[in-house]
Amino acid sequence: MLASGLLLAALLACLTLMVLVSIWRQKKLWGKLPPGPTPLPFIGNYLQLNTEQMYDSLMKVPPGVAFSNWERARPLRRFAISTLRDFGVGKRGIEERIQEEASFLIEAFRGTRGAFIDPTFFLSRTVSNVISSIVFGDRFDYQDKEFLSLLRMMLGSFQFTATSTGQLYEMFYSVMKHLPGPQQQAFKELEGLRDFIAKKVERNEHTLDPNSPRDFIDSFLIRMREEKKDPKSEFNMKNLVLTTLNLFFAGTETVSTTMRYGFLLLMKHPDVEAKVHEEIDRVIGKNRQPKIEDRARMPYTDAVIHEIQRYADMIPMGLARRVTKDTKFRDFFLPKGTEVFPMLGSVLRDPKFFSKPREFNPQHFLDDKGQFKKSDAFVPFSIGKRYCFGENLARMELFLFLTTIMQNFRFRSQQAPQDIDVSPKHVGFATIPRTYTMSFVPR
Image (cartoon, rainbow, N blue to C red):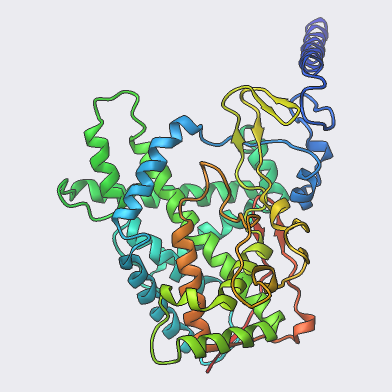
């Protein structure tokens, strides 16, 4: 009894000390930090959050999650950008690769013969094959069982980040990784993706020709050899697997999910779909594939794609960043190490820039003469030094895939337009559209 009493007293003393330290730290910075409710030890402001509407909650209360340090990420980022460029991103080579993949997708849609289908994996297979050809040096067959398994893992992980459990997992990883729940399945899926990439790396190691890199993995392995004597080098096996996973994951899910949301919005707004069809027929016609140079002569289609991205708001909170030094922001003080979210959704839905921010309206990106109008508030790829370096590839894919599909098909829903629900299924660290079926009717 005495021992248990002493243990309880020790625990209470530790908790009291932690509370006092927390209060002392907050009081020390009182009046300097941005306004917000007082955080509690361990859980911070979690009790003030609505995990079912994390974005709306975070517009009122800032917590944070850990991401890579900028100084460590910088050489990897520079390498990834230059290597993607070497393998054709931003050049004619990648455009031809997208066009080729688009033709496979068209044949797959034709094979449905107008039946109502869930387009999810049709789109993810196609988009994923573009980035796969860069990071792995080849595309996958659409019926490849391993490929389909990888896509299910990625979709499951991406959707998990938007759920309330997924947000808890991100914030309290060290605790929740030991608890039962859906996070264990997400963890298993991520491990499965890492294992797949690790096997790809091992295969490349055995057949590597330093004078002729075949893909992103080869280029990274070559750089590892060049810097193997540098103890501070970021080019190691762990970073190779994680960087490849990031490229593969982001290069698949963001574009394919945006397109899936776009199809739903176009079925909800058949008048917009009809105008895109008219512009495609007038500028491109039906006898050749769309090219990226067509975009300059298709302001309405370009505006529609921008509006899909704005409305979908795929990563509404952006990715958490850490302040690298004591920083004064406006009249507030942010101590070194503070984690911040850019909250991209607050800009994408700002009424000062978009007249009807809660509505899907391509006019947001058109001037009075019907010409495409840029907006400084269009930031779906984030902002600053760590903006998404896959932006150019994503923009090419969205334009070429959407115009090629709409050149060949009309969209049909099982519901009347007024009955289609375009509100998201989940909004957390990602925005997930509702599951639906649709028919691709040949034009």
